[in-house]
Length: 128
Image 1: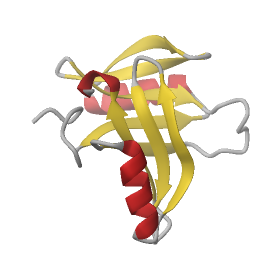
Image 2 (image 1 turned 90 degrees about the horizontal axis):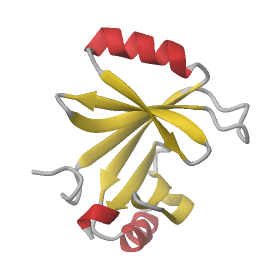
Image 3 (image 1 turned 90 degrees about the vertical axis):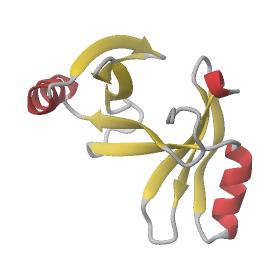
Image 4 (image 1 turned 120 degrees about the vertical axis):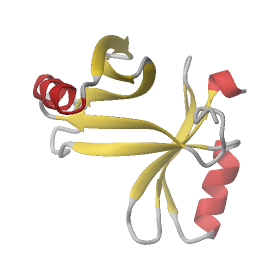
């Protein structure tokens, strides 16, 4: 199974943190992760690799969100972001950020489940 192509697979994790350098040291040493800096948009993010497979990234808190607390986010692969977002709404969830396309990545949206938990759904460009 390729989690970047399999509908319903947990495919990517990201840590948004106030101290990316400290997080790199902590998680790198704790789990033996390889962390590689990569320019993504306006910031440098540190891509997490496990056994040569990219699994997520560590990034700074966006300047536009200075009050944001450090948090982990989960991306779940879907076949169609718009359809899945609509179904989440039908089932009592909320679309907090409507579908957005990131060049060279794919389309994603931020959802809140009926209990208040947040997660992102994504359809990767390479799976199209």
